[in-house]
Image (tube, rainbow, N blue to C red; front, side):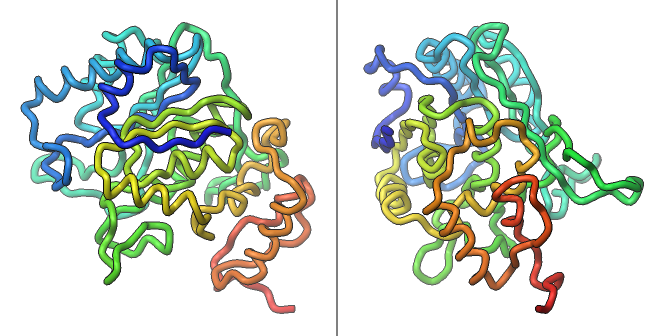
Length: 316
């Protein structure tokens, strides 16, 4: 499978590579909120910024297979601009996903605290070429009396994926420089890309990330046996991505999340694993200081790999 990280400007790349066709794009651009980037001005005039986004979205549309998908992530205050941008460039609306954060809400002076980001899911054409209806089994609500027999379908509110926001402890997944400083303040979590890629692609499809950042899309797509192309303008991040791809970290290994989707029909068709991978997953769970192998869950060969906090660990 192809797994390419290319240093360059995504707009120029798309202009110069007309035969390229993608089945799924994850679009997570700089949000134009004054962040300090080495190779990008994050304080563009709004009209200039959204004209740029329109050009990028139109180019991606032209390089997308019929029925292919785009997931455009942005701040909640830019929701209307995102929807307008995608409609203007030919895309068809499917869902507006609310990614609810697990950290404290961001307070504002005269309004409700901000507690989510949006991810706009659109397709080229009215009918998606691929949409896999994933099932998950989150903890029961206090109002729910009985265990679910077959889990539940993923909805358009994603409140079960932890963000990697700087300023609080986010576990070992965030990439860090010597001394502990975050390598990138806007790193996307593995779980987020896992859900997106599983939902809107199949094995062998081609995934595109025009603002690759720390390379989460590439790391996940490669493990899911999808071809993937990432574009990143900052050379330091390109080198970071290459290093991340060369040696899979335990925190990047998606196998530990397989149990989350154990109730999904025909899961093996979109997420193929082999005996060696299964053995690695088991060993990782046995040696984990934060979890254990949950017994008695036979729905899937990977159902037992759900991670639980050590405080719930059973003896014996």
